[in-house]
Amino acid sequence: MNRRDFLQAGAAVAAITVAEPGAAAPRRHPNLLYVFSDQHRAASLPGEPFNQAAAPHLNAFRHANFSMDRCVSNYPLCTPYRGILMSGRWPYQTGLTHNNVALQSNEISLGRVFRDAGYHTGYVGKWHLQGRGAAFIPAGPDRQGFDDWHVWERTNAHYRSWTYDPDTGARVEPEGWNCTTMTDQAVAFFERQHSATKPWMLMVSWNPPHPPYNPPAQDANRYPPDQLKMRPNVAFPLQGKAVTGEARPLTGSEPLREAMQGYYGAITGVDTEFGRLLSALETSGVAEDTIVVYTSDHGDMMGSQGRMAKQVPFEESCRVPFFVRYPGVTPKGGASDTLFAAIDIYPTLCGLAGLPVPRHCAGRDLSAVMRGGNVTASPAVFLMNQMPQTSGSLQSGGEDGDGGESAPAQDRSAGAGERTGHEFINQPTYRGLRTDTHTYAVAETGRWCLYDNVADPFQMKNLVREPAQQALMVGFDTLIAEWLRSAEDPFPLAQAALHISDFPT
Image (cartoon, rainbow, N blue to C red):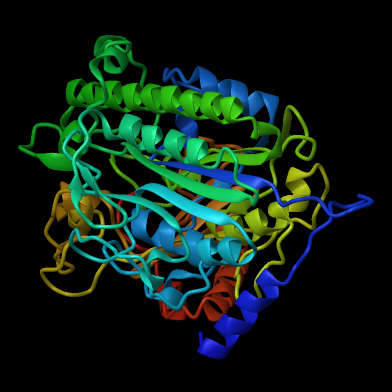
């Protein structure tokens, strides 16, 4: 993206005045509160089958407002998701194809678009867009248009992470669970904006329920491990093996239930903090003029398909909550099953707030759906994962730039039956799609999986070898090829689709 396009786009946004459809006079832009946790799957929402995680504030918010029930994370991994969200572009267009890669300072970021439209912009919590290693980001272009800056480091260390004084860079180490102290900072932002004359936009990024699964004891203790139910697609491929780290819960039902206890407890803790945010927003007196969104960057397999973590195309990994409230605009108690993905969030937030969608955005503005209208349905949303190619590099499932565990890169010469532990969880490189009815993915080694999500909602029967499904997969290959061209993605689909992958599902 060249400087001329950047400046033209910024000027176009800065020059606008917005009127609500049908309104007699322009209305001040609404505030925007965008809240996203890390690794909260839709399958662990109240009312979902086999879920026992309690989240009363989120459940009430969902059912009183508007829910996009088919929200999909295109690339279910932290940095790639955040790159898509912040840039409105695909991973190969920005270079954010795996974790610990920096978003370039010349992107027309979401923060810049709102700031240039007259907003006071703020960011609190996990950033994960500055590349490997923890370092203070001084005021300037690398803050991507955010004025009020409270980014945290090593956020996976939920009780030992830190933030910085936004002006001096001095390290600040609050005590307690970082989800709570991040919420404290967000509440302080509301208080600073009490008498502001221009609208504000605040993004709050919590790390839990991302592992380690160690929420406050009162939340974890709500879920006795021996009383937790498992989804029917849970498997234990590593049972009886000595495994540590993210893979350990796959060694048997007892360690998995321990992980579930912590995961569910963290969801309950996040729910408490969301309730605090809503209460503080109400107290501030501007709730009626504020768009509120709750979502997550991706899900967590939690033993389903014999996997932990994310990055795979299965529902537990890529389907996430997306709830929105815009008083007087989004229908109360509404929901939509329109396919909606991470790539659509940037243009949709612009559309909801009444800002023009920048030309560079690759996704769709689906704000009309959230206003109770209709749009022409997209045939599919696209899914991907890209494993680093460099021998000895950090596996993309690790997050050493943000306090996670390092893991060895996959030995690509190993047979499928030899892949265990961390090497198995977050594999393979693939491109795929999610339609209204199916999930399909092609790995580098061949067509990998095809599921009929209507007949098989837990994705337990892989149809990729079924002769009757060949025509369907050919059509899906055409859709993926079109997307690869538009996303400037070099994945070798034509060659891969000639084969069937032996990688396990």
